[in-house]
Length: 307
Image 1: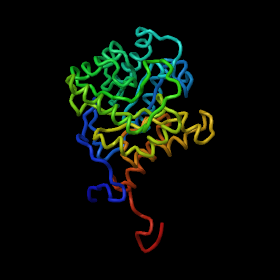
Image 2: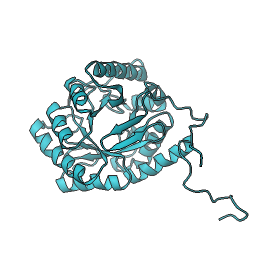
Image 3: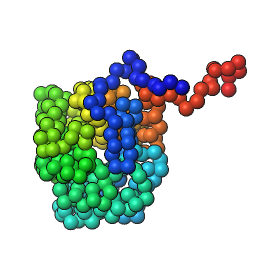
Image 4: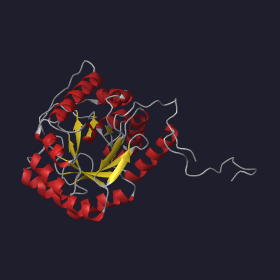
């Protein structure tokens, strides 16, 4: 079989450095759409509402995600939205044992979803290789940490201070604003010593954005991808999916898969999802449609008799 290339029907924005070594894995984002599994060790996460708060359940969920084909798992101990105060020590107690247990049993990429330097530092030492900062690098020391350790940094568009309300956000052009913000933050990170090959961007669906904003980001995701760095579509079970379909949190899987696929067709190279098995299937099919991979086998209408 020949090596597949993207067809002209879906011209993908080029990546400046598509091949990334993250932890123990090397991922070529020019030919793969990675699936990032979500593991929340929080009692009040917006979707699973504590389902994986217990340590054993969090570890089991992360390992099950890896077995189901996830390229990496994103472990969080504090939700983005406002809620009860969680100290740095408590956050670390939540996420560090999960990172340690998963790193000891799997080569899956591990990211820690945090905005705190001390949490990120301890988790990197324990085996995490990505810091997923949803605050848009409000603490520049996270970039310095990634630079000194070789970790990958996810820079996400958001406007609020950590865990604070940002009421009725307004944008003249939400996509233009997000792209400008991400480019500026990437420049800051590089100025602090981070190499471009250590940076991933995330437009932050629903983070300080309403449903119309998130839909606009989805339909114009190619503008995000043109930044030239691997971009995350973190769309799973979010409110823009629920409001678009009129569905509650437990009935948003199909809408989430549709949103993730739409973003991937426009250049997203990582999708952050709850339902790993279905997401992996959707992304492998999307890669095949894009011409990035070939079918696993060819039998239908290939011979004198149809099978």
